[in-house]
Length: 419
Image (tube, rainbow, N blue to C red; front, side, top):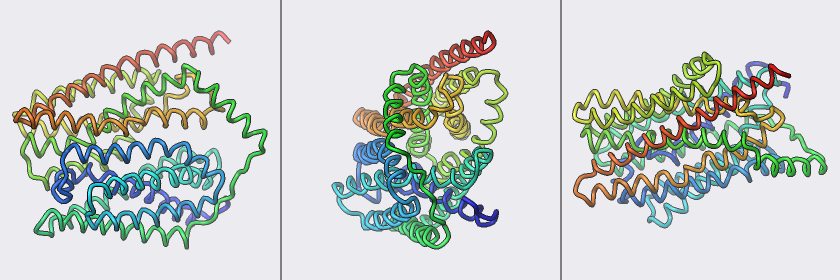
């Protein structure tokens, strides 16, 4: 799409901020876990259920999102997504019953992924030619983190202005709804209509056949193995290290929320840039992933062993957040080393996202039951210790996946040299 530089930058910023804020309200437990439980009057298991509902609809939404992006106008889908997220969040702020909360989190999954994810990617790609794609998506990821950080810190400041957690949490939701309303208007008036690249029926048939073939490729499943391990570790650390600091280390909820914002948003930006530079230093991505998973496992274990030294343990949780974000920000770079052809990138990423990101469905329900078990035993720390073991196990599986990835990379490199 032909846009002048300033116009394109404005559109890029708008789209990127939407991509960041779209997940802020549905994943608000990452930052305000304890306040959310208190305000809504729910248990850890109920919160885990809400997270599971959102995760399920989100994962299921990856496939229809791609279909919608091809069938309908991109700008209209973006408008629909922002407007729907605004209305859903307003409903959320009314603190309805648990059944309604389940519906709300299901709708969040539909409109933050199903109608948004592929249209967002398509819109970003349409902003430049192939030579600019890396920069465009890199800037977008950075802006997403910055946008999330700004809104999250505003929400944190507002939370502290109210006498009760319920009033503060409602104000936070209303701020999110207002941001969605503003973004809806910005899309309507500033984001252009993007041309749809419609394919012929024969091409569609070919794509379906290629997708079935892709399901049987070992390279796809190797990527799924690596990405699932990394995503489980990221999901666990991002969701529960904040409440770990509050309930085990006994720091204040306000300080815990501040640290959660640092872990969830600021570190995302830092890890994305530095992690990419570090990973490119390795001859094989599998080697880089090996050390990243190893460091994550060691750091997770260190959380357990330093729990009696509060400030040291807090620092360890921040380092852990950095490590899991390094993995998450770089695991899409393994496709070539795993043997996924460039021409299959679109199909491959769709399949990998559907399966590799499925931990959104089961991580929260599982961890919440660990915590409930600990509480039933009279000490929630027991549940958190089980969670730490869970992270060490997935780090070990990640190390195995990295070893397999490196072996695949070595074989492919050898074939290239022989050929």
